[in-house]
Figure (cartoon, one colour):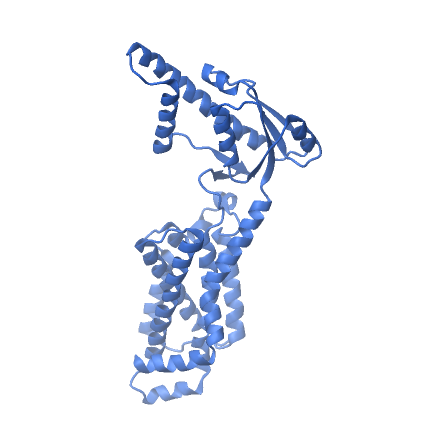
Amino acid sequence: MVEILTTRWFHWKKQIFSLLFWLLFPIIGTLVLLQVLNTLQEDSKIPVGIVMEDESHLAEELYQSIKQTPFIRIDELTEIEAKQMVQNHKLDSAFIIEENYEKEIIKGNRNWLITAYSSNLSFAYQPVKEMIVSYVQEDTGRSKAAAAIYAINEEAKSNWTLQEIITKTKEIQLRENLLRTTFSINGKGKGDSTTNIWSIWGIWAILTILSTFFLFDWVIKGQQSATRLRFTFMKYSWKGFLLRNLLLHTILFYLFDIVASILFYIFVQENLTWKLLFFIFLYRVMVNLAAFLIALLFNKLYVYYSVSFIITMIVTIISGAILPMDRIIKHFPWIEAINPFQSFLEKNWGNPWLILFIIWMIIWLIKGGKPYVKN
């Protein structure tokens, strides 16, 4: 193994910049692409105006709930400003939280608490309205329940106030996840627990496929080299040389995968656990086996590079990491089954692609024969 490491290091030194570029490509590419996508997401937030005519506690909580909703940019305005901006199409829509909002909520009334303004170009008015109505319904239902408990509380001579009961119901709601509001655009629901719609590890997984395929061109270069003839007189075979290099590259790539997980933890607050590192290792083994076995099928670099791009593009499309695939998957559920890193993203043990490449590898080890086809 020392001889293999020495030989490989000699090759790496001659192409150190190319090697480092492709090793760091998934990490830097993911962080840069995520920043670009998040910037686009921020710029594409729906502008909505809010007019606060009630300065009560419940009205302020409703405002904060609306403000924290993903994909909505809130501007607090006066009623005149809100009307003008909606008419000039500077706002998609505007909503007035009417005076006495809290008093009416406590009474159990939920009608005429919010006034809305929209225009003929308010494409997101309906889902935003439904979202705000759902918040009002939560407040109303919570207040009704609190009023009933308060009445019982009075009869039992306890010391709970109405506000304390409402606060307690909110704690129970958060702890038990009794209610969950989602905001939907074009049929794709977005929960209010996250503002990031792109999978960080999904983007990394796609870029990893491309970088791995390009770094595994050593297989084809080795097959083209005249030094391959010398293995007839060496202590290990050509196949043994390939396997030792495969192991060496897997170790090197996995070290950079660990670096990626640490950087994602630092810069984008992704969870870093032993379980994640284990599934990253399984994914790395799968991708390396795929690149190694596919590279064995070719003896021309430009054909191999072309196929690598095609495979990466196909995986990018079916993965849903960049482009939403929910509607297509509903009609064609088998697309999700062939996603090569679905198991990695969901941290499932059964990865059919990993099993497939392991079987392919075993067949290659047993059968041997000519390592590539004419192309």
